[in-house]
Image (cartoon, helix red, strand yellow):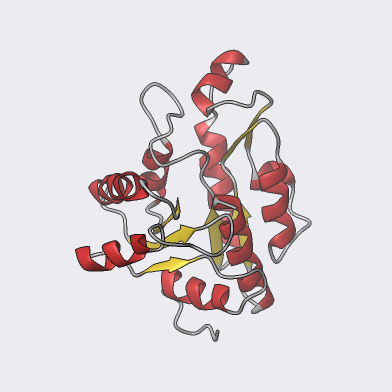
Length: 208
């Protein structure tokens, strides 16, 4: 369970609450399963897949490597056009990244740069395990350097039940202060997903 798991459940929760919502996967490599899940969870599952995922590479690698392997570049105009089209027809657009905040798209631009261009609030999904704090806090710093709102921190456990000493990551983050409250990944179908969407997206009108 990771970024796709979280993004799909946020989209699904908002859709069930009657919110016009779309998932968006700007770049996919290897397959389009993530994009297909996001499309199916949204309020309009008939959206063209190329709108939900405008840039797709067959090569299962980082976008920079996949683009070079296939001898074509990333079409940033297509990414921006698709994002704007979804935003113009939906109340909420949930964007799922690919691989991590600083994953390079070209030699000069990263996924974080793309989020910065869109001004998107950011939710960091991190594995709830030993060693994650350094990785997570470096990502927090990178998000804030771009002037973006850090909306949420989700500590994701593959088993769904963190155990000591792993479970103390949330405790450490709370002690640091100045961060959104770290939350564990809710169970599938839980009403907590709608509550998190309301909190992270600052949508006070939603009822959990």
